[in-house]
Image (cartoon, rainbow, N blue to C red; front, side, top):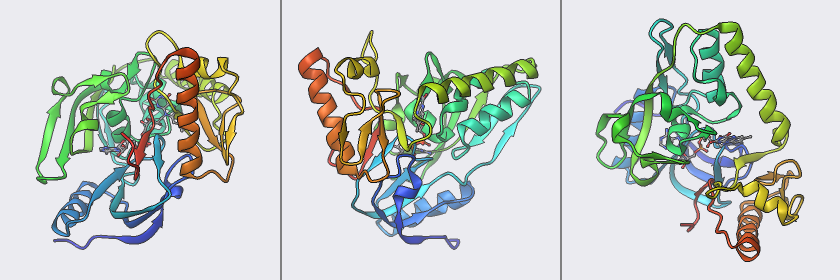
Length: 296
Ligand SMILES: Cc1cc2nc3c(=O)[nH]c(=O)nc-3n(C[C@H](O)[C@H](O)[C@H](O)COP(=O)(O)OP(=O)(O)OC[C@H]3O[C@@H](n4cnc5c(N)ncnc54)[C@H](O)[C@@H]3O)c2cc1C
């Protein structure tokens, strides 16, 4: 087996956008698919649990010591764009804002909505991240995956993946997303695409707390209403537990006022759920993924 680059005792708060997280026993940031595959093989042959993070923008990691290997894909940044056909081949770690801007510059239409989402392509497929009806799944052709249990590598076509609102099959299996093949509409008006992309980013930064550490929307929107609206109607904007606060700008965001730990945030999530259930009779489900907790 090739040499692998492992670090020990790494503080994962530096790898999440909410700036909270415990310590990883082993940590690595592969630069390409070969390095990623070697890391998975290492974890299997050394019987180490293996977990994967992208940009950590939808992630609450417990403030504990996380045994085993944590892999961050953010250095897997290779992307090939065919301007004429609109076909894009992207490694899992490519950031959505990077891809969105590149597509617009090449005259490819369909990625303008993704500019304000600070996640990776792999994380966005796993989460089925999106804006309104627009998600990466709309443009997906296939995903290359590795089974972390069997080490098998396979190509899965979009028709064989179940995508629902902020849900994909990958939340229920052991498949690690290595890369994705996507299709965008070619020969668009570059000036217009760049303008729409810029406008979308402006709208996001004006309506959501981009200047403070957060992990985006905390809860999924229930049917026919918005989680943020329900929380705001209960007067909870600005409500705090420890260093965790419900954003005064957008009630479905929790922000870290520099000193929050995972317990503050989990408690705040639980309090919001209890209050919304009591007062509105609606059970809010977290969109945010939990790591290192005994959370369902
Ligand atoms: C300011 C802000 C605004 C946001 N706006 C939006 C929005 O408009 N719409 C929206 O949908 N989301 C939004 N988000 C949430 C978040 O950016 C998305 O969910 C994003 O797709 C997560 O990608 P990530 O790479 O950060 O994943 P991470 O947070 O690192 O991981 C999320 C989950 O995906 C898994 N995962 C990551 N990469 C892989 C992989 N390669 N293979 C298998 N599993 C993987 C992880 O194990 C974890 O369970 C926002 C977040 C922030 C901070």
